[in-house]
Length: 430
Image (cartoon, rainbow, N blue to C red; front, side, top):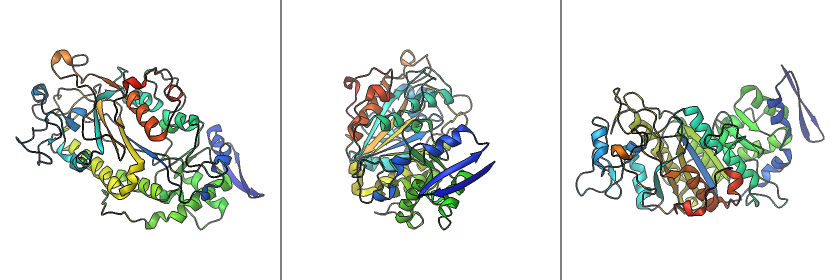
């Protein structure tokens, strides 16, 4: 392969030999949308941050139904102990009581402050109506927004970007920021695939790689290293986007309000999302994911494998909220996982692939301080297929409510084709 970059009349063109059409597609489409990316200083708007827990997080040990006797019968060694009688808040190895029936895993202690501040809204027994137990299929359905439809092109967040009628982050000429949608991932996730431009990068510092070189060197370095998957972006417009980040000084960023992010990849990604929000570069959608939730063996209870995952998860989100401070009035965080896990623990001290799960909606405009969703119960006759937490809330109901109320979406039928749900199914979370 031979990649050469030519500059002419202030524009950049990539000329390639033997490269795939996918590479060419990245190089030619959305230059107009990226044009003028450096003009977005001091532009603030609403932001939605979507966080995917890949691997199927165990809803029953995350938002613990400690008031359900069947929960303890089915999980003799991994159940989270009931809160001490009369105790409220963090209690060591016990569940952190929320409302007398539900509690949080003790590793989710950073979430309890958000609960008390009415910024945290757990939604239980939520997920996809698909019966699949395949991680790959379930993640595809959740990201495309079309359960059991494998032929859907692109993801629901990209369809939102493509269908939104107004743009709060546009400049005076109606042009959108290069950073309107950013994924802190090595490659573009399905949820952001589609005709609307987005940027995927594993690290803000990778995005500005070789910033001391010529324009041609900077662009070519990104493609050679794979450090950033620039969807529908190329040329001198890409360099303009780099200039925006350089002005924000990614390497010199310091968290505020005493926020301390975990020293993990997930923690670093959330810190960099905070940095983009504070830089006022026109960010509207941010996405990050974190794996390690497939706990078939040695899941643990109050301590162990799942507890460690949850400590990183909640610590990172808690630090993000603290870091953003008053800006959380304009920010909503939406978590998701492809499905839950079996109600009964297995013979390996873990749990297997299940059905319904739990998610969190967090933000200044969230009507927190209560657990949402209809609880189906865990008695044998109440379980899905005799083994799983039953589904009572379609994930599209929560997602459509959040994206409508937070970002002003008005084409839910286009964002979630084939859904058919109405506002009567919304839970009133935001």
